[in-house]
Structures are given as C-alpha cells and as structure tokens.
Length: 124
Length: 183
Image (cartoon, rainbow over all chains, first blue to last red; front, side):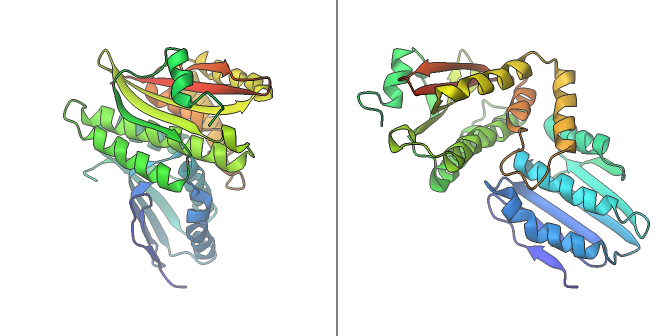
C-alpha cells in the first residue's frame, strides 16, 4: 500500500501515515465537515490494519481540534485497537505545557481507549 | 432579515447589544463567513492582554460556536427571512464573552432548553464524565459534533451557559447563547 500524506491548510492538519507503522498528524483540525475530511485517512488506517507493521506509533500534535474531529480521532484510534494482536500500538498525544484543555482531551481519549496513549508536553 | 427587525434591533430591544464588540457578525453563515470569523477570533487572541491560555480557550470555543451556527443553517430548512445568525465576541468589565444567535422554531425551544439546563446542572467532574460517555459512543455516521458541542463549550468555558429565547412571532424565536470565558 502507498503512504498517505496531506499538506496542512489553515483548518486541516498535516498527515503523514507510512506503511512502516509511523503515523503522524499535526497542526489544526477544525474543518466544518470533519467526516468528509477524515474519510480517506480512516480508509487508509482500515487498509493498514489488515497487514500492520510490527510496531505502530501514531503521533498526534494538534494545536486545536473541533468536536467533530474528536469523533474521527476516536474512530481512528478504535481501528488501531483492533490490531494489537499483530502490532505493538502506541499513541503519543503531544500538547503545549500551558494548554490544559489539550491535556484534558488527551486524558479523555486515554480513559476511553484500551491501547496506550502517552501524554507528552512539547513545543508544537 | 425579519420585517422591521434586524438582529441588531432584537439585541437593542433586549439590551443585549455588546457595547464594545471585538468581533461582530450578523447575517448569513456560509463557509466564507466561517473562515472570516475564525481568522478574526484568531487575530483578537494575539492581543497581548490575553494570555496564551485564554487565547487558546477563546479560539477553541469560538470555532465550536461559529461552526454550530454553520451546521444549524446547513441542516435545517429555514425560510430566508430567518436564515441569518449572530456571532459576537466582546469584553465586558475585563471578562471575555462570546455570544451567538439564531432563529429557531418555537417547537424546538423545549428540547434545546432541556439540553442546556441539564448541562448547567452538572459539576465539572460530571461534565467530564458526560463528555467521555458521549465521545465513547460517537460515530462518524452522525454529521456534526454528535452532541459534544454544548458539553465541550460548557466544559472549556468553566461557566454555566447563559441563554434565552426571544419570541419573534407565533412560529419563530431568536435563540441567544452567551458564554462567559474564564481566563
């Protein structure tokens, strides 16, 4: 399968999903219709899940995201939950130190998910 | 535009018109308006009087409020005269507020009221649990924010949602949502 890459826009993130298991998204995710925007990325993760690399690391470095994006993120994370018998899966949730809301969002996902999600303070 | 009643008129009559708006838009909420308003709230946030934390909060909540309006007009068939909305951001006694307004049918008042009243009764811990519960069962099959919008706004603002319905005629009211944002 091909890698999936998207260049960022003022309302949508940079996405760089590689078949070697390195998945990264960064920037802003505030499209009006998040489902339409994320469908190709969700499809890619669905395909990847059929034959994943032995290690899968999804790095999320979002500056802002809207609630409709959060639905797409949970859907993406759920797809990764299904491959833990074939791949060691880890999500890294980056946030800026003073951004308590982004830290809380990471904790929300951490609470819901069965795969490890690590909260990491960093400069976005 | 309502005959004899622009949104500004309604706000003036109800003493809701912001004295010193930092951002103000009344009219249609298409994609172009959404983009313009998002740029404006981003620019206001760069003002040095707002710290980084408040800037992020205002942007997050502002985007949610503006896009709520966009989706409201996108998914409901509203007669042209009721298809305009309001978004404003203002500073009152050194506290930041966001306010939105849109027309809705009087028959929708009960359901909107019960949703907001329920959210307003919850403690921060209960809001967090509710948000997580709704997120856990969220599906991309649903359009929009899957009912997370009001919960997210209340949670991030740190305050109860202030709202009222101004009766316009026997079919429509003007719904005003005012959000106080803690710095």
